[in-house]
Amino acid sequence: MITFQCLGCGQQLSVDEDRAGLNVTCSHCNQIIRVPRIPPAGVPPAPSQPVEWPPAGYKPPSCLPHAARPYAVMGTSGKATASLVLGIVSLFCLGVITGILAVVFGVIAQNEIRRNPSLTGSGLATAGIIIGIIGFVGHLFVLALILAH
Image 1: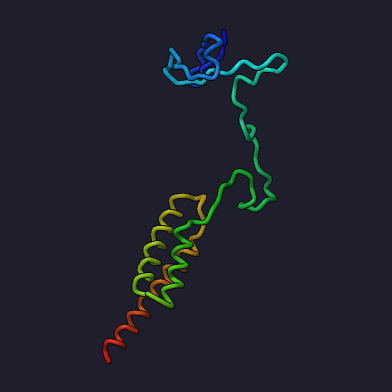
Image 2: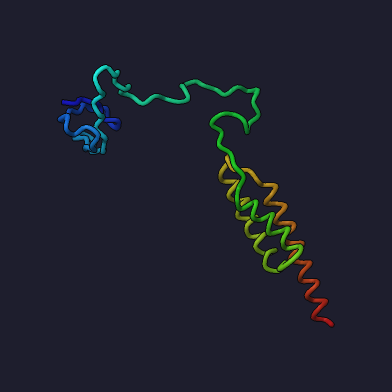
């Protein structure tokens, strides 16, 4: 017989050893739980409660810059990068199309960054919007000159 606790409600459960490694449903809270396997002889059993990491009360050292602190998952928004790349491309070719796309991606990226504090790239998005507008207007001006002649 294997005896273990439900991780959802703490209820003590017992099942036959042939159910080791299989999923069972807690009769108290109906949560699906995997029955722990029986460790081989001589191997100490695993802790019954999950180990908390980082430990309670842990604070990262204040001497580390924000980006280097452990557990601070940060990244640059891909849409902000796309906005900047499209903005630069809009200066040289297909400015009417890529300029509009640069502005659209930049605005979406800025909204995304505002909602999710782990994302960076607000400056990239702003630069993409500005350069995209310049590329768009510049190409419209060139098209107007070409059509006028």
